[in-house]
Image 1 (cartoon, rainbow, N blue to C red):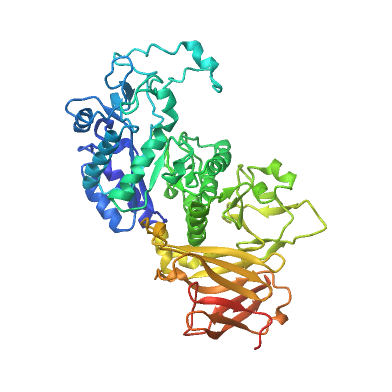
Image 2 (cartoon, rainbow, N blue to C red):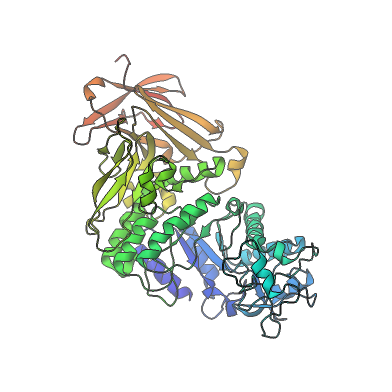
Length: 593
């Protein structure tokens, strides 16, 4: 009940564990019915949600597309009046299936009147519970009988004989297509010429589109929606979780290929249930999964009510590992957001196998799920097996830098084709996460000490950032994206997209997307320092200066060389600042001092 939600949130807060959102499964529903709150165990849900949102938590509720058949259930009655349900080709009445609330009807998202009905249901429910997002489940659509079952019997195949399914171009299971879903012969009121067979794969997409439209048009918010069922184009409206996985090492590894696939399908906001949904995760498995999940596009810990609790506070080591993993994600919040929004604006993948960046290196085919690129710059090497304290990890022939130490661990060799294995410490005791920066990249990162102060990722906007420049052949490139994070105003050009280009003489920052007249006024537009990695000859750098494009001035910057990791640290003089919006160029070579 709602008391358990409050308990979990209180534990996160008292243990100072970062937490950004609260997701509620169908437990809150009365008799497992959409839009009805269980008044016995969840009566205070609207009040608690309001309190959580005041503390910057996001609140997401699960919802299903099947409505219980009950003349005393207002949504069902309203839907009948608006002819909002999928129709049985046999009875010409709403098709009857079975879902969580029992005998149910299915909203017909092909039908314009059904779209308005869905919008009305969401609007009325939002007036009661101020949810920030919705989690669309069972929208394949799922059915606990085959086809339709008004009398509790399995559906009879009236028009499609059983051997029809073996004649399909692709049916690997050789099972009837109605297995655990609605009839392929069902009809849609607005297009009775086409059976459900021709619409079936679009059901989740059409519900996703309608739900996203509610957030955009009615709430004036960017949609935060996850959908179980997706189709090409769904990524424009929703994200996805990869389903009810299991709490074991094999399923953790499998999550990588799942996420790779959905990036290819054009659905970038995707993740697996961290620590697993079914079964009981050990503290070690959950710790490693939290480390991996920190680099999923969507990070969410979620499990079955039949499984043991797997919140970070249930084990001291798990808690410590989880804090570090989540806060590492926090330090990369601007980098992650930039990678996501550049994918939204320009396409591409930001969670991908290394072979996409190094297609000629055939060794990478054998380590497809052992490592991955997170965004354009970061190579992540997770621990995917138990009892691993040291591992050999393959690195393509390139310049690579350790994100933790900022030391260069591998140099590009033009005479070689293949890369090499490098031994990496993976000690869970030391809470090691192996993340490396690809040469030729500029990474926007926040200081870890700043992240340690916060338990909400949105608060990272109150802290300045650092630029990590990892050169390849003395050049590098990176991006930084800013908008209001909440609305669709970026569609009207109200955002900043900066490109950062580095050559042997310095760094140039240029606005390449958005509008100069739009303003962003948070602290993370300020650059606290620039860290230039792999500097072999510091004596060549006599001074560092910045060309400020806002007033066309030239300003001297402080610089310090750290020989232990061959790093040049550049900071502004006291009383001055470096910001994405005021830097034209930072010079460190070929200048008059």
